[in-house]
Amino acid sequence: MPEELANCSVCCCTTTNKILMVVFMISLILAILFGNLLTLAVVFGTKHFHTPQGYLNASLAVADLAVGIFVVPVSVYAEVYLMIYNSMPEWTARNSQTTPFHPCNFIGPVFAGCTLVSITTIFLLTIERSIAVLRPLHKESVITKKRTNILIVFSWMGSFFLAISPLVFSDEIALEYNNPCSRMCNYALGSADFPSQAWNILLLFPAFDFTLLGGTVVINIISLTTIRQHSKRRKHLAETESQSSTKPTFSDIKAAKIIGTLTLAFTASFTPIAVFVVGNVLGNEWCSFAFFAFWILTSNSCCNVIIYGVRDQKFRSRAYQLLVFAQLNTAPKKTEYENAINGGKDNEEIVKQS
Image (cartoon, rainbow, N blue to C red; front, side, top):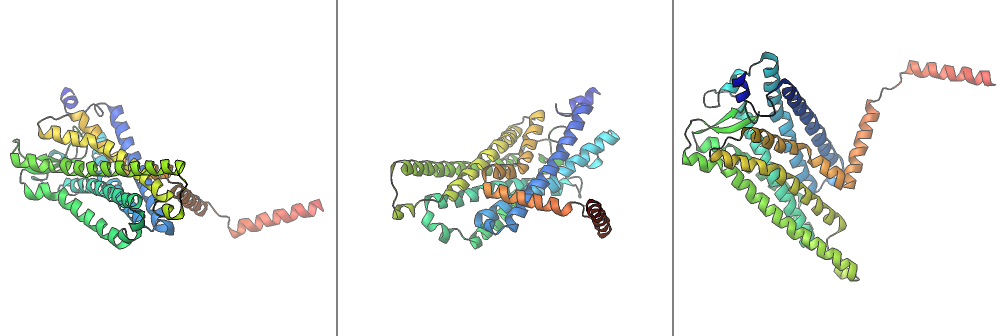
């Protein structure tokens, strides 16, 4: 028992904590699936959202959906197996270098790739909204559906290439299920030593992510500052038609604020992971911190639909319509026999009253 406690993080050492952890993971899967499927239904089922911004939101939802479909269920399986058999599955004791068909060979790059897709998509959303705010007259000519779809394809290709690059460019890096700490598939060193090449490759993720997030934050600050200046001008100056034509529309301003909220939420959820990776490269294990860092980032996969539901009235209204429509379609319908019986009862009452 002492050895077991020594090899577990603070969240998962007792039976109660293990049960709560599994309940949390299952609830997270349901929240991710529900929220992102609803987002895709709103975007593809409503002509109003067939826009560059809508397609970028759909790309973000697909990346989050992949986390709920592939990444979290593997952790649920491993933890439920541990609770039932009091031991972990055999593959969790080995890394991808010693096991040819290790599940983490697929799950690890999927999680890393989808995280990178989310960051690049938020960056593209920020660029799209900044053009709409700073250069409203050029919005229609610069931001087109075709260009947006091309950028989405390149963002997915580039993100997953970066996700598998540690495995391609270094023989020292492997994938493993980090049972004591994060409880999910992570990149790790196949050997006990820390080669300098592995240091540089492992630091690619936080370097790339913080570069994009830093640029996203700066662009958001510029856009929000411009929006604030426009708001002040509206209060003090009477705008002519020529002046108003060069100003961003209310919907563009609203969308820019929503993207700012998305950026803030993702930065807050990703920062612990970046701190952990840097600390891990420097030799710190931070077991309990690893669990919270990875699962805070994973929980962000169900946050985007909440942000849009709260901040975007059109999205909220359309989502509500779809849910009501689905509820009406799933409600039990009366058969012809029941309708005939009810009709007969109504006729009897009419005869009695007459």
